[in-house]
Image (cartoon, rainbow, N blue to C red):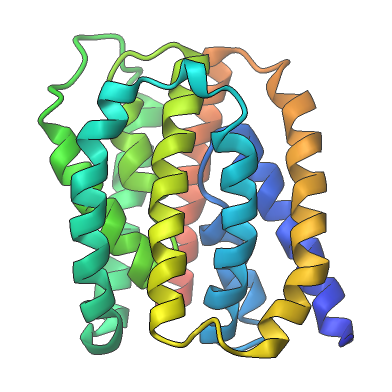
Amino acid sequence: MSPDFFYLAGIAFLGALVFGITGFGAALITIPLATHLVPLRFALALFVLVDLACALRVGLENPKNAVRAEWMRLVPMIIAGTAVGVTLLVNLPRQAATIALGVFIILYALYALKTPHVGKPVSSRWAWLAGFAGGITSTVFGAGGPPYVIYLSRRGLAQARLRATLGFATLTSISLRAVAFLLTGLLLDSRIWLAALAAVPAALIGIAVARRIYARVSRPLLMKLIYLVLLGSGISLLARSL
């Protein structure tokens, strides 16, 4: 097994730690770090397997806490967004799109950190845009979480319900991304599966550690952590594109 695989396992642990606490954001941390060691396509394919393992662990942790109505609003547009994303994956001018997404995420995170959201929850109609945007960004950038968390964090959900619902949405998005990558051949490289033998167990350990941390985090602090991860994600996207 290549020494790089053990470095990738360490990156997987770090990403899973963030994912286990916030329910999203792993790919926007792991992909930029991994591309210092392996090509982008290899990193995307490997970490869709890692992300899927993490999403299964978190998404099925407390399914009774998930708000199924919110999830059902997101799912149709996640599917539509993923279908569009598969087409864009080959043809999209990635640098311009990545810059645009990174700027949007940074601006929203800064706004959210400065202005606590204590007012009226946003309309459920925003689920259509969040699901569509998340499906596209999940496939094209390996990161569908920000649109989902931007929407769900403004729906007035309790901490446990926010985490569980976000877990369901993320699990759906990552599962569809894995299918898309399989159909496009990105997952047919045997080296990816060898790397996953080291990365997936490391990620599951990261999830276990995150669960202990999460149990001690209050909702206001959790929301601040989410927005900080969003800010870091946006900066990471800009760094990748520039």
